[in-house]
Image (cartoon, rainbow, N blue to C red; front, side, top):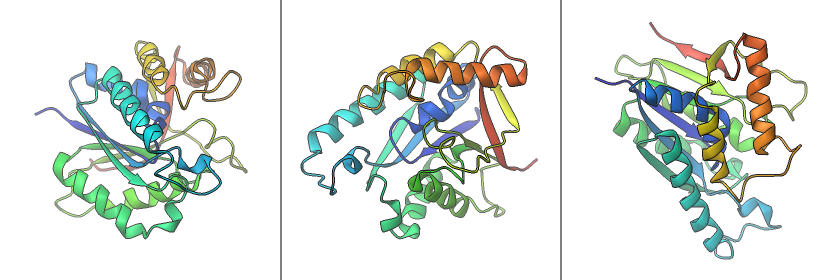
Length: 226
């Protein structure tokens, strides 16, 4: 049976920024990949949350999610509508229940999610919810959990603390990561912003330099059960 991988991300594009090249590589090796995106995205850009005002933008973004994940070979994407950059206004249990539900359907072996000390509050809460939803009980399928960085969040928190200990070689899939990210037209920024295509590529190159590879994605191990 093929191993299953689940990306659990707070926002549309986090899944590609954090682990797009790695997921594409694992899919090529025969893994089944799934994505869970918890937040609606976009609404935090207004002074007050107005979902009705942003409905068309949200629908467009959901289309971008599907296209981006298709590029890296994700089998299915699950999307929810927790308020963008306002996860702290929602009971943690509500988020945990969503993760538990999707996790129960997929039964993943490996989970990729956010780093606990990102600047973004939604990333922090997603990390906590993932740990809560994947407690190491006897019937838990998840045997590996990794935290990824998200450019323009992880490195913008101080003091810097992201200290990765796992590096995936994405030299053969960096182009797929960039192609997937290019689908997120509403999320891309111009260079030298960290979420520009050039910035993303340079970041993968930097991790590659640090790990003896051409291009790499970096992760912090949360749990491995052997």
